[in-house]
Amino acid sequence: MTDKVIVLTGASRGLGAALAEALLAADTLLVTVSRKPNESLQKLARERGAQLLQIAADLSDPLKAVVGAEKVAAALPESASSYALINNAGMVQPLALAPQLTDGPAIASAFNLNVTAVILLTARFLATTEGRARNRRILNISSGAGRNPQPSWGVYCATKAALDMYTRVLNAEQRANGVRAVSLAPGVVDTDMQASIRNSDPARVPVQPRFAELHARGQLSAPAQVAARIAAYLRRDDFGQAEIDDIRNYD
Ligand SMILES: NC(=O)c1ccc[n+]([C@@H]2O[C@H](COP(=O)([O-])OP(=O)(O)OC[C@H]3O[C@@H](n4cnc5c(N)ncnc54)[C@H](OP(=O)(O)O)[C@@H]3O)[C@@H](O)[C@H]2O)c1
Image (cartoon, rainbow, N blue to C red; front, side, top):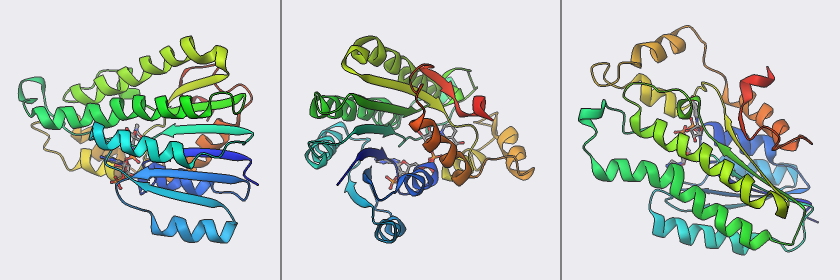
């Protein structure tokens, strides 16, 4: 029987792939959403006797995100003891100083993925799980960038600040329905996203040398370590008490 149901976006690589590995367990149904499947996850699910459903959707396209959210909703079983939605998929691009932020479609894609898709997935998740369990949790993977301005990160900082505020609205509105939401910054994690920051042009991205140096000094966190801590965080009894949080507060 499925006891726990967890929906996780962006499980194909990076932090999300590590989180999926940390969350796969015999009593769990894990439903993932990303553009590409994660082949190694399927094998791991078989080994652990976990249920895994991987849904393909481009969440940067709101119409495709709606279809993806419908597929997720259809996969959620009627009776589980808990339901969790982890909105982890995200993009840091476009990175550029304010006068160079001129690529409308690229800016819209970032807002669509980092904010709009979260709102759409959350809507279907809430509507579908309403009345099914008292324990409903939403974990939005945010960033310190949503709380502290970074030159050339105007788009990314704005999307993560929006995510933080949306999380607060969720709690203000849905807590009475047993929903608890947290917007959690994961720290600086060694993923493709960090590589994309490191590989950017310092003339356009003035913070590039700082991130290149963090990498050179081996100061990026390993995805598996961060994922293990986030998986434990998701299980905490006091989950939702700090609605805007940072996993580094629990070092
Ligand atoms: N890495 C860091 O240092 C860091 C720091 C602070 C916050 N974060 C946040 O942590 C989260 C995970 O970041 P990461 O570093 O693991 O990023 P990543 O390595 O770039 O991985 C991004 C994940 O999101 C998925 N994704 C990207 N575009 C998508 C789309 N259009 N539709 C559906 N899925 C899409 C990717 O899957 P597909 O390509 O298969 O679609 C992938 O699984 C993000 O929300 C990020 O903002 C990361």
